[in-house]
Image 1 (cartoon, rainbow, N blue to C red):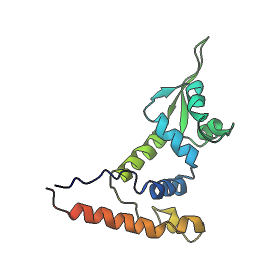
Image 2 (tube, one colour; image 1 turned 30 degrees about the vertical axis):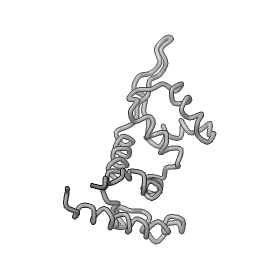
Image 3 (cartoon, helix red, strand yellow; image 1 turned 90 degrees about the horizontal axis):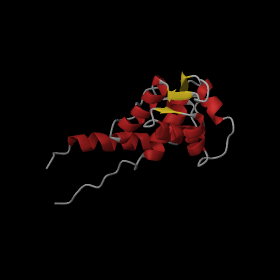
Length: 147
């Protein structure tokens, strides 16, 4: 019996581009959200530790705060640092990414997929064919009988 390989990341590039377009995120933003998702609460120092691995941008933390991806959980008191957490919005983005990696289709309606809009960038539109192929593959896999 041939075992089906785990292909979680086969369409990662397509899924990543979809979320970059949908939420106006950068690759670095997505990487940080994926890392911080399991951290729960974190300090700026913890953020900076991971941020050093990514393309340098001294404004990234402030930008992510302003865009509503992180929020303050507890302000600093005495020698205790400020504690941050991901917002519910940011957590939902990560959960949705995982659902797509686990085989949920990317929506193909203009209202749910900014890559389909007329004003979408050319670099986004080239992904549409691959999204269609990915969705078709997912639909076919659902129809396959389980052994």
